[in-house]
Image 1 (cartoon, one colour):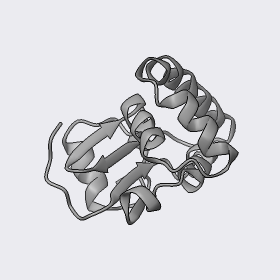
Image 2 (spheres, one colour; image 1 turned 90 degrees about the horizontal axis):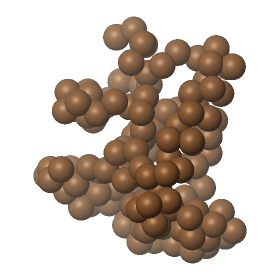
Image 3 (cartoon, helix red, strand yellow; image 1 turned 120 degrees about the vertical axis):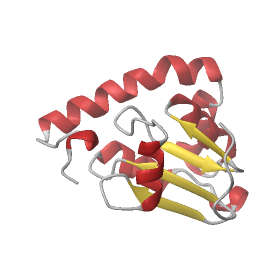
Image 4 (tube, rainbow, N blue to C red; image 1 turned 90 degrees about the vertical axis):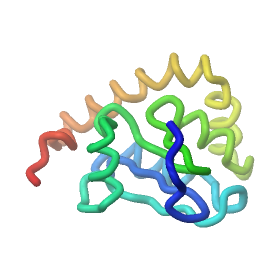
Length: 133
């Protein structure tokens, strides 16, 4: 979905209450390839969170990458992050090897989402959509 870029670099909108999501966005290495990276916790007030919800993106179903005037959600987001990240460190090499494939991303992302949802339930955390506000 083409959209105007809000600034140079990238924006990643993720679930800040999910330990996996939070760790993932801090480990993926993007700054060398895309410039500044703005991390946005979907559970905190932010105009981009409102904009994405208004455009119909379900932030409980996947994180979002906005880069190069485009918005990537869920499996597409993970694939783009893998393609854009620098191969520094074991995490980024494994991430790139697995998720640069559109097929692997589409097959594995639902498994990751199920794990995320289970962990959030175990931790007693609500869905993003169920938050007040």
